[in-house]
Image 1 (spheres, rainbow, N blue to C red):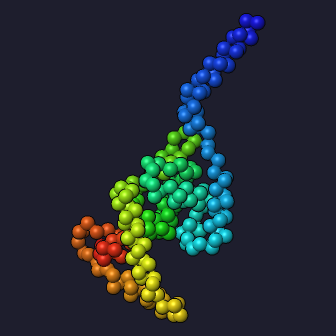
Image 2: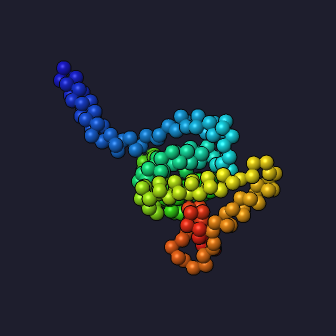
Length: 194
């Protein structure tokens, strides 16, 4: 009877310790990202052109999708599968190149590992409201260009039209005038650094 009481108390103490340290314990349990296999297959099925995305590893694609789904709300961090440094840089580059309308992310970011979990920690250039305003203005500028797109032109003519339309909208700056290298600066402000 006494041994059973001691055992019950020990189990109770272990349970209480687990409850009060749940966050710490949870950090050592790897997250199951297998549900995102459907997201990867959905991108493939939609035949959405994401040139750089297609070159990523499975975990790189999972990280890309998780970040893309959440980044516009400016979270402090986004959980992703653990990636080697080289794979992380390849994924970040793919995310940036495939999505030129992600205006708020700086060109630098990092991956932080805590326990068995990895987190993407982005750096932002502006707040959410400013980012949304800039993104809306960029989309409007793109729609202006696309409205005048020749409907029955061949591929060369379409490419030439798009080239000329972008060039007509912007000028290169040779000095740092607060203008950057992004699509917003080029198509909305009409300036970009060389």
